[in-house]
Image (cartoon, rainbow, N blue to C red):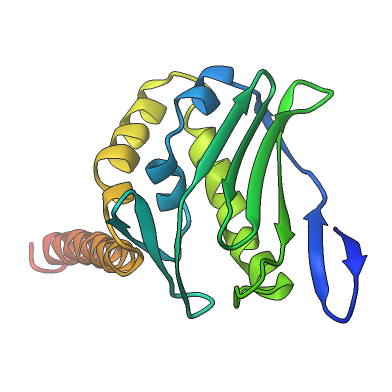
Length: 191
């Protein structure tokens, strides 16, 4: 759901509805979130750090730009604002105590990012943030293991590297399954 705030010749200001989650708000998670980790949760961004700012190549929208992430933290509220492109992603504690996510977009002068591209960007980014947040919902061994994998391996890669790694992993699993099937077949048919 989107709310159009300003309807001049082109859509300039857009605010999405809050995406509710079934995950309890964890204040510590949002307080510890840094800009680079948050930007790496975008599944389509190549990020290069340049002079304190970040050069971004968005492969989904075919859009290149430089930006800086301004993180704002308050009790029960968190936001990441990207001033050069006019995009802000927000998280808050909902009335039921669960986390809610949303985005706002305000078209900046001279910026090629429009409301449709911003919506596309947020439609992939917010679910990615939600799934990463899910790893912090409880402190089980499984969640600690996947947090380690995400923080130390996956978030350090570029999007194509993640896809290649995922493909190799799936291919390896398929090879293992085929080897087990061949082993079972050999045991039953040649013994």
